[in-house]
Length: 247
Ligand code: SAH
Image (cartoon, rainbow, N blue to C red; front, side, top):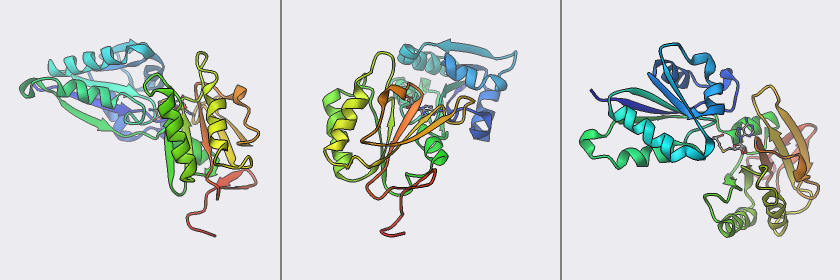
């Protein structure tokens, strides 16, 4: 029997921001695996007949191996991530782990999209990512910090709007302040910034500020920092990036 591994992006939080395809894949799975908070995010879809394996944040490769092994053994498996599983999520690990198996033993793998944090966050403040934009993670766990700075400089110099993921955690407290300094090398202090925390969750919170006044102490693990391009304007409570000069 050929199993199926579905890598599922659950969206940013509330069930109404989850795609019907994602919900169906979780409901139909015999085994659901994911970091504990992501299992909670799809608890409404889980039934008594399913095996649910909760993992820790740091056990991602083990979780991917487990998911692939179960699918290779013939099970229908859903591996869940928040947002989109292909954006700083589990999709890469799952696909590369499956690719290591001999073709004859490799399970079918599907990746289902989800609303990523940058988009859930930008919608709450209007349309700051309406033209060209970039996403960067400030977590130097997987990217060396020098490389993060090099990319920040390139984005700032290219005048792209920017969504910063993983801006701060209990153990990573200086990165956002340093990122702000690097961005200020190319961008004015009046550059629009939105701090969106827990988008699409009950604790959802939005703060509008500027690069010059950005207070990193109010940013946490579940915040996405949106930095406007030079053309991004504040219109009341909205941030808007024109889609063409003057539009
Ligand atoms: N795969 C996820 C991202 C995981 S990285 C996605 O596509 O959204 C984790 C980072 O995502 C957090 O540090 C935060 O910057 C951002 N994030 C995740 N959920 C969020 C939410 N509901 N609101 C704001 N930011 C969020």
